[in-house]
Length: 379
Length: 170
Figure 1 (cartoon, each protein chain N blue to C red):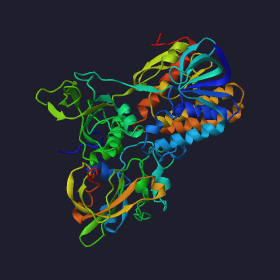
Figure 2 (tube, rainbow over the protein chains, first blue to last red):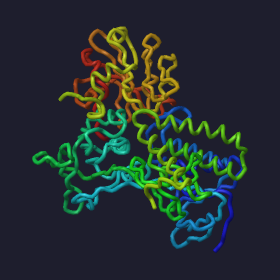
Figure 3 (cartoon, one colour):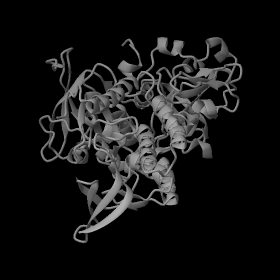
Figure 4 (cartoon, helix red, strand yellow):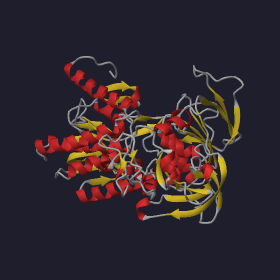
């Protein structure tokens, strides 16, 4: 099999991977990026809302426009982006196995890299209930792809399960696309996402039913309705509280989990941190895992959002380039401080606290592991 | 039903609004156009600060601070309404006419309302509280496709009306 050598290979051309590529390639490192999709940008092109944060985080800019800016920067920086390219494995000696091309016309090759950055993102959680396999039950992210990328309305009468920012934002966007959202159903007694996202949903007349769940979906060949019910303090459905809601689509926005397969295959030590979405690779302050030369960035290190993914990508790309000597340490330190500062800003406040604590735990797990103490999970 | 607060209902409660440093007093509202920043949670966000052409909004170095409105500097121009990624800023003009107040809000749905239309004005919970007349629909390059709609509504509803019912699909 053909082998290509490069300085830095990045798996995933989403917010984290692209920022890593830009940082690294701008120092002069030879960078290759691989993504299984036919377009780079990851989830950014689905995000039609304006981002939060500060000017340095490109706040106030709609996500897809940030995606376009990143694509332009990647083109200018000289990193090679390989689309339709699946990194199916990671082997000894920091080598990736790649299959590139359309089905039946693929080429296979190996990429031996001095440094590898895993930035594959996360996948949506599923929730099982009677009827949950009926056509019309889908992930909120899938619905968002349909409306904002493919311009197809998945349904007209929608129930959203989950009130985190994904559930709230996708509900809003479904209404922008012309659908009616009949209710947001949330098991917890409080709304999970930002109040401002919830506020715009409420002004549009959508009830947000906290302490409620979906008992079942029904329909002959596709979703025709759902039974929802109120929950007591122990998350048990309250008899008699059932409501029958006629709907054609049920979207699940019940969290995401990191796509850690390549990290496992590389032999990265994992920590189990529920606040970050489950098992995540331990990493140090420079995003390097317990496998020397293998870095991680973005949702694979713990589910957050695009703005933090971009900063983690910046950090990983810079760190890898610095380790290869493409940028001197003093200059790298200065840039790194800016990235860390911006990341800390995004993890501040009442919504960031849980993630901030969890990320500190993840870095502490890395150092404990290196010292040979206190590995609590992931063996 | 009593509103226990934004994390339970999605609508900021009267107490949360009263404590928000971006919400002007009744006395200031009575003087004429002013921004009403209904931002009550410490989320990392500050575009409103840079958007204000009069320097009337301060978030500060810690971007999770709530925006503070300097009601003396604020002219109610509404530039911040389109800049807020959370769509949480409005303007209220209590002196729009003898009987009506002007309420501006961000709007991102199609079809767009047009000047002169009479629409259903809704409160923070999406309930129709009165009819409102569309007196202006603003758009600008720096609004990045958010429209700012101004409704004239009976004065007594000025502090309730925060949007309009979506218009039916064409």
